[in-house]
Length: 313
Image 1 (cartoon, rainbow, N blue to C red):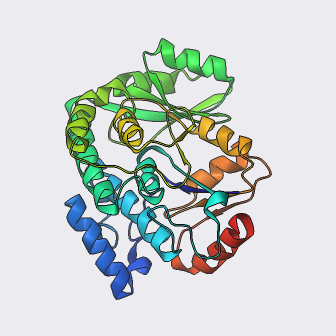
Image 2: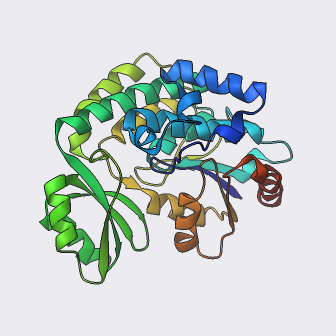
């Protein structure tokens, strides 16, 4: 059983799409995704600097497009399994914004719908972040109960629960700074390079606008098991997938529960799509002993195909 996972915001780096669009077909795909997203992803994925692609309005469509591009290169998408694999041996999930391309790969959304959705999500979350100075910080280590209590004591939200020893706090910049100055025992507080307190009530205005956008969507039921960030459970109804994608903007990401479901379903391998690395790192701690593979460049594709065949034949 193979879990194919899509990373979230913050995993992008300058120029990371350059080697992926050397052939005309890939460039055409990225141009089409750019049109749907209303962003020049060709430029942002190849020549824009780190500060530019850190902007939420740029980063989110860039991440979604990257996962879709690498999935296409592996022959995967729209609920169809890659050649030589069985749909019965696959499940998909995505962390935060990564849940959007995961929904497209599961067949609940088209690629164009995914990019339209992320266009609104990214722009409105950027606006919400600009309205109030907010941020996020990873709390690494410590005792979970004590970490959660410290986050609550500073009037912050546990916005991402990523697995053993890592909870991301979110809220006002002032409160994040206070937590950093007074960390829980045996824990480190690491400020994250993000523009706002995502997955908290600070994003309520963005969620309302996103809800208006998806009201016109017609969604299909996922053809592959799609794990939800809300509770780690597989969602089988297309309308519910859309509702959860909207709600996710203001709700905590429970990646720890997604990994618990992977373990319960007997996952034997985790394949992380472009830009890979973050979720395979979490899997090493949360799914100990389960092999993982991160797709980072086109040179990884042959090994990725072998990994697919090993775990989802």
